[in-house]
Amino acid sequence: MTKNMNNENLNFSCRVCLSKKIEEFKITHFGFLTKNENWKSFFCFDCGSVSEFKIKKDEVTYADGSYRNNKDHFNTKTDDKKVLPPIDFWSAISFKRWAHIWKVLNISTNIFINKEIKMLDYGGYNGFLPYALNQKHKVNSYVADLDQKGLNMAQFLGSKTIDLAKSEINEKDFDLITIVHVLEHLDQPKKNLLKLKHLLSDEGVIYAEVPNLYGFPLADEAHKIAFSEFSFVKMFKSAGYEILNYGFTKTPKESIKFDYYYNHNFENLFIICSKKNNLSPNIPKNNIPNNIKNFKYELKLKYAQIMLRKISFNLLSSSLRYFRTFFLFFTYGLLDFITLKIFKISLVSKFFKKK
Image (cartoon, rainbow, N blue to C red; front, top):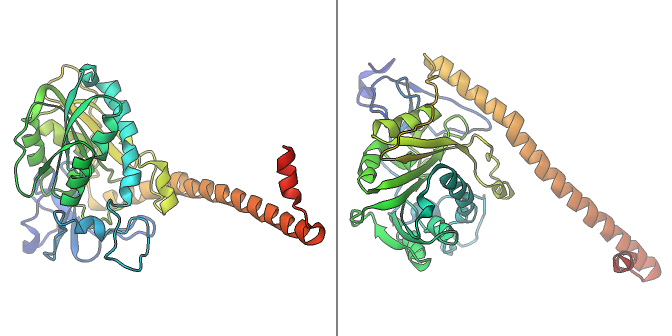
């Protein structure tokens, strides 16, 4: 039974497990921002995820590219909003996710023993991930997405493309399906997982990655779900997958240069699954809080720990690096200016020439 809800809210259910055992909550935070008053957020006491519903009907659209064009990841300001780069700025950072994906797939599976693998990057946008993997192993890649601009880039980089706004995925027997930061955008992700399972080859595997509820802000207007570790694994198990590996991963460290400083070891969740497997790792413990007050306490406690142990030290390390560079430039500039004014000779240049 849905907790503490009026009749207006009884139609809501958990997007992950469809449970009605959910409760609405509000939370404000300085460092980990949340959505505005146009959203309703619910915590699920059956799976431990958060489902969010937009009250106003102006849904985020992906097919026309406006989702990425309007997303100011790096706080950049341009004079002419009509002149945009060919690919979203964030792609330069997210491209480097391939390294972790390649590593854990090699540890957990044998798919790369094949001379060539057939790969589907579901919601892959620009095809950067298969482009990277193809430089490590021969990949026959397909990219399925709604964004035509991204699909054009994916095709340019060598992938076959599937426009999900116009057609279904007719290909099958994929050795690898990747779903990287896609499931949190969907209304009911389990439905998509069930469809994708039928597209896998008998020995094929799925790699999926999402933001961690307890490590990432709830502010993104395009995100409809925030997964806990337990809810993420439970969803794949309930869809009939066997778990090969799961854990945590983070956004590449270079993101801090563009004012994104949430990259830490527990920022994102990943999972690797197959249709069949005899050995599954231990499933995470079901540590779901028993009431909404305890959930909010645990969430804020995790936020506090991340701010203290991760974000603050990331920023300190970055500032010290820039301070060192500032000090060297300032010192050498001052020496150059004084010696050139007095002796008309650059002692700094002479010093480095001798070295």
